[in-house]
Length: 310
Picture (cartoon, rainbow, N blue to C red):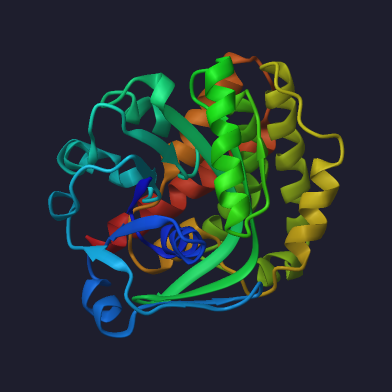
């Protein structure tokens, strides 16, 4: 099976390197990292063992790559407007897609190009960063949960095949039938911690936990996210809040992705991570005051920054 990584940043390169090292045929679509990777290869410094792909298959664009059997979309949701230009050259009549993107609305965007039955969602629980092009630091985690966008028996069977492929590459995986449930699982972390680190100007998890009351604020927001998932018919594990709090307290100087985007002057995935999920909370009729305050704080932070930059 030929695989293309569309959006080969830190996350896409980490998982792509793991798959390639396990023998899968992986093509990386690179932009600014093309020359550094061509010269030095793809380097992953990982808590689970370092990797160095000396001569990975790399392409400057999807036209050079051509059709593949599986596209793994790992760019930010803010880049989905580029799908119309970049995705079709990768497709043949049977191409399947996995989206590893944060938030909600990504599979819906992809369904404009392929049938929903050929789309799967992969939720990644991982801390990795690309400080310099072609050099990835994997700090923690890596688990992926797979689910079909269209909840069918064949979709679940395909999710299990993806889980097996990633497990063979050393990634802990599970397959589920309900995509929205695993989306809420990831959002239970992303909404509070990605959001609070962003709202405070791009701080690390360590700094957040040092701020009086902010860890408890994160817990309140997480409980609200879990309540929304419950109201929508997707109850999350009973221990998820405590386990997420404990896991996050050990992340140290890790800065979540949206906070990094803010610090680097890049657009932030507000709609996918906070906006669309908050709309679904309102549709479910759940009271979420802590989450609403966080969303307000993020919007104010982004608006003020935009004004200062202009």
